[in-house]
Length: 229
Image 1 (cartoon, rainbow, N blue to C red):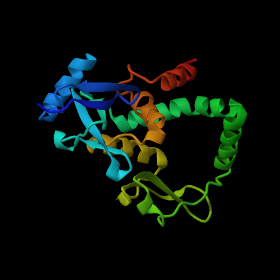
Image 2: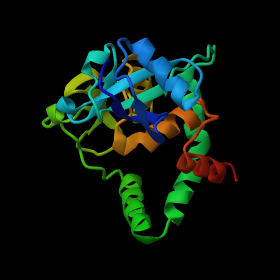
Image 3: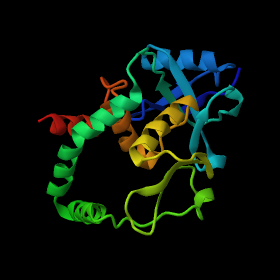
Image 4: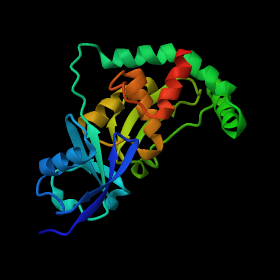
């Protein structure tokens, strides 16, 4: 009999639990997922991911339970099963246009230190004074949208998506389109949202793309209510 194992389990980005397996790690991913679903009383189709300490604690799809050790962190993420004929790119652009005016007003009305930083950012943005980005530090970024401006600081001369230091989608045309393509890339490759941008990507997914919008974190739910008020 295997030694008892304890794991830190993250469910849908916002719920963190401790999972105790008295008989140790199950022999297959399916058996492990079944044990987790039974313990947490969750139903549906899920993807299991594990935190890899060799890659700066990034999450990767779990294909074998051999890599799981005691006290490791596991993420369980529900797969999207909705079949739709609606263009997700059109949906993203429509919702972005629809919410932009209210979002800008909310940012400008924000008080305190955060409000000061936001107003400085919005002022620079309105004057097209955003700093030109370069590809010189591309290898340092796991996931990034690269926006390069020309000498006139007007529309970007190039917008591309970087993944693990490599330029995956050059010539995206605009930052908004790059965000849409990035969401498709994340789900196609089963990537986890970057922890520091998890709420940004949740807004993209649940407000702009209207995917799995029933379950939202409290922060995104609050933002939605303010946008609809």
